[in-house]
Image (cartoon, rainbow, N blue to C red; front, side, top):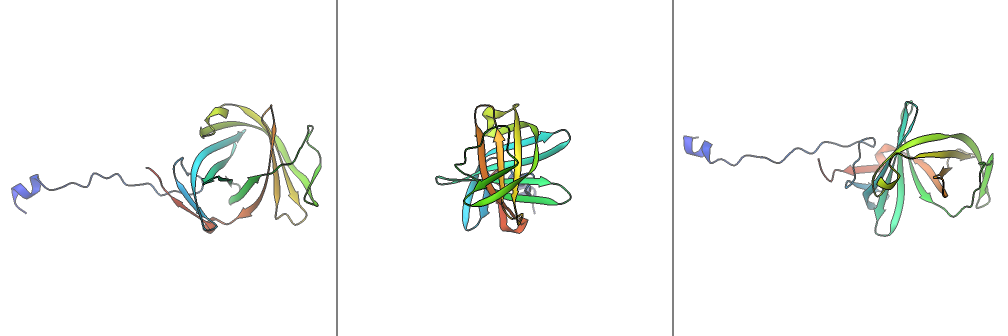
Length: 169
């Protein structure tokens, strides 16, 4: 190459997009799951002492689901959907939903960091409870935000069931 070609050569200034995993998903990313493309519109990071887990609010049209991710002994992923189940405090030892019984497994409090559509809960504390059915294949999650108790039903998925497409760096 001559001197002029080096001076006027186009430089590749496009920043390299960092590869994502279920623990590094960002607002604006796209999640491919179950033949749908969901935009990540909210993120809640829960912290209880030194333990941390994440829920991502995924939107496809008017359909909203939540992808939960946590690193316990191994990566654990779940898909949750809000359900209309009335629950009062104190949280009961078991719940019944659609003729199936769910048993209390875990209860506690966590401080949250919210991003995107969840930014309004940033810095708050909440109480949670997790329930499992007999086969431990379905879960019910309760989250008490002070003014209401949100109830979701979910199930575990494998990491190969989701594909993450980065929406930004």
